[in-house]
Figure 1: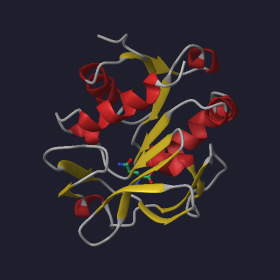
Figure 2: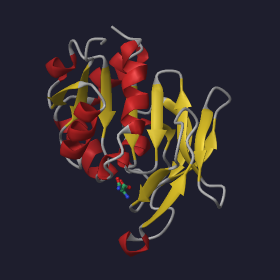
Figure 3: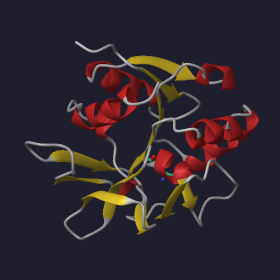
Length: 196
Ligand code: GLN
């Protein structure tokens, strides 16, 4: 069996513990990221769901915004879920401060309404075979525009784009870490195996 890649989970705010559990199930070693030196030696990084304004503020306070951007520009496989996707987007018009901004997508925060309008839908995701996966959307963003190098991996039945990939970057509006299906984490762990 191939070696377990070391994957970091940004652990400032949000549901980083759930990601750690899913990553372990998908075959990765996990380390929590709170300081720039934690980024050394990781083969992948997850930016979790939570509150993007709070995480953006903490990234600045912990001097992590620029180091994370640099690692991503050097090729570090990185996946943002929900708030994490907002932090990766180059164009997040509703975000109140500058952040990582590396992915050629536009996101609209809270596009499906308030918390009470959270919902689930089973969707097919390119690269995941078998049964559809359960997409849980909690005050989720829509990916409203994508650059030419971005591939669309998944949409809701109404056509809303909720999963995209651009080179070493993956972004989902939904939260696979809140299900016990670790196939989406498996897809990301495969991306990290190509990076060392
Ligand atoms: N609405 C949140 C934000 O804008 C994201 C919600 C989530 O990550 N579940 O940051």
